[in-house]
Image 1 (tube, one colour):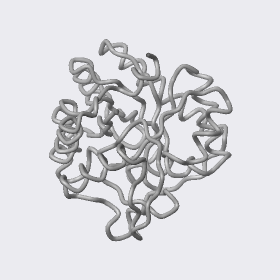
Image 2 (image 1 turned 60 degrees about the horizontal axis):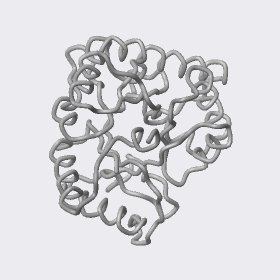
Image 3 (image 1 turned 90 degrees about the vertical axis):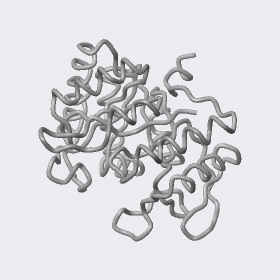
Image 4 (image 1 turned 60 degrees about the vertical axis):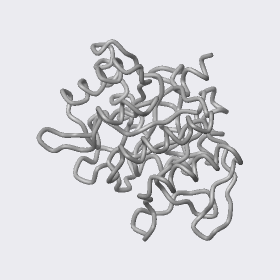
Length: 254
């Protein structure tokens, strides 16, 4: 199993999360590309640390929304969205090369992630962008979402993702951050529910029902309160249970 986190999101004097702490725990890092968060120097620092730790790197592409941290819905034209995604991946590829590593996958962020999970037009634009810049990149998306099928149909490899610290609806979508209980904070609860997901292929939704999910990677958000403690508890719980951890990109290439 792969553990991933959203990193490289600090901006100048504004600090977001603990990249160094998370990079000692996760196996994949979704690194900001400057559109929703991240400045070039900080992104480069994160990439260098990821290379030192043997952590796989992905491009965490987003809508151009620094003020809203990429969590506000937007409706760019296809011309704009394709170019925006290519631009972000290309920028991260350049910084990654300077850090001695490479970009191996793409994980959209925030509102873009949620939109393309079910919006065929914007999903198609993101898929087009990846195919145009590097068709060997893997697209990470929400487990069970139509996006994964659309990407496979166009020849992209995909990775299905679950969220350790987010609540799920009975339909398998993430509960909106505006709703109570959308974000989970108890490390033991988070670790137990993810181990259950790996063991049974199901996760409990907010109404108590069980949702089937086939996943390749588990995300712990780097900007959540106590993110490092939560990720550490999850890692230790999985290792104690005998679940091997490695970057999903390694597994796909192997």
